[in-house]
Length: 202
Image: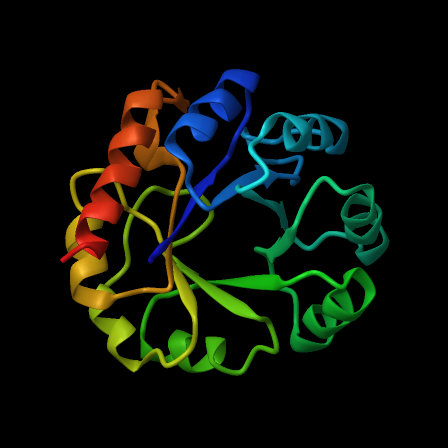
């Protein structure tokens, strides 16, 4: 089964929608420069609202390791996503100090970026076009990926089924692709999850 991550949860009603759709992961943006930023306190509150079957992911961008550890120890997140310029040493340190799985995001512009991603000590990769741009990269570059990865960037309910069928990623990640006017659209979330599950059934 392809893992489904709905990222950028900002409201309690978004948590309710996820409880109904039951994706595998919910992403909390803990980077203050993002318009989808929520505080660590809100992340902890949302963890309490979300169904326990949904793992929570804390998304950090070049954050202080102590900050990451503090949030991890609060119980707000089950997975750490590093979405900045964190090097291999930092990734390994976060893994050791938090004891949580670490996902490292890489912006893909070409085959050389895939090569770089293959070297990270992170448990999983997230391959994206950028930070929440909603645009895809050239997915033909995925042919050279031989590690667990989440496909992100440009996915929506209309194209995610085809992406899953063709590339068989470990997981898919969506944020803007299930939004309307900058907020999570609960019908789009439901449809996105349905399309992934449908593709998995073939």
